[in-house]
Image (cartoon, rainbow, N blue to C red; front, side):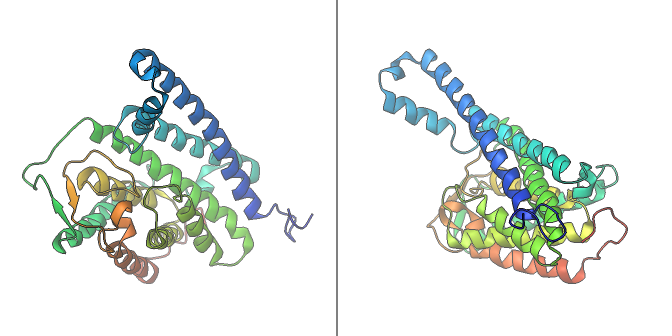
Length: 311
C-alpha cells in the first residue's frame, strides 16, 4: 500500500513519527487526567470550603498546574517527559533496530565531553541573550546581582529541565531525524524535525509567529549539532542549560512557562527584544543568536565520520 509504505517497502517516516507521537499523546493524556483527578480529589478533601464553590476549586487546581513553581506541576511535567522517552524507546524497537545508540543516545561515558561542552555553551549562549535584553533596557533586574535568591525549587526544576532536554532531543533529533533519513533527501531530517519541534510548543502560553520562527531555528541549530557530532548529548546539554539559565538563573519565562529563579526579571514593556509573554525565545535577540550560532556550527564544526549514526 503506497500511502503507508514507500518504494523500498518501508513504512513511511511520516507514519512512524505520527503514530509514535499520537500514542505518546493518548498515553500521557490518560495518565495526566488521572493524576490531576486524584490531586483534585485530595485538595477537595483537605479544603472542604472549596467544595462548595466549584469555580474556585477549578481555578485553584488550574493555578497549581501552571508553570513549574508548584509540586503537582513539576510531577506532571516529569510524567509527561517520561512518557515521551518511553514512547520513543518502544517505537524504535518496533520500527528500527531497537538500539538507542543508533538514534544518537550513545554511552554517556564516551560522550561526556559532548555533554559538558553542550552544558557550557548553552549557559553562555543564554547569558549573552540576557545581557543584551538587560542592556537594551527591555527588562531590568529586581533584586540585583549581589542579592541572589536560592530555594529547593531550583533543584527540582533542574531535574525537570534535564528530562525536558533528554525527551525533546531524543524524540525530535534522535528519533525523528534518524527515521526521516529514509526519505533520502539530505535537507528533510533537519527541516522537518525542526518544524515538528516548533509545533510541539503550540500550546505554550504567549506563542507568536516570531516564537515559532525561533523554535524552528533552534531545531535547525540542534539538528546540525546532531549531524556533526553523531550523538544527541551536546544537544541535550545545550538544551538543559539554555532552559535553566533562562528560567531558574535569570528569571525569564521559558517558552511561556514561569519558574522560581535566582534573579527576578521585570519586563518593562513587552516588545520584540524581550519576547513579551513567551519570554526571550519570542524575541529578536534569540533570532540573531541562533542565526549566528547555526552558521558557525554549519560552517566550522568538524563533521565526525567514525561515529555510529550517519547522515
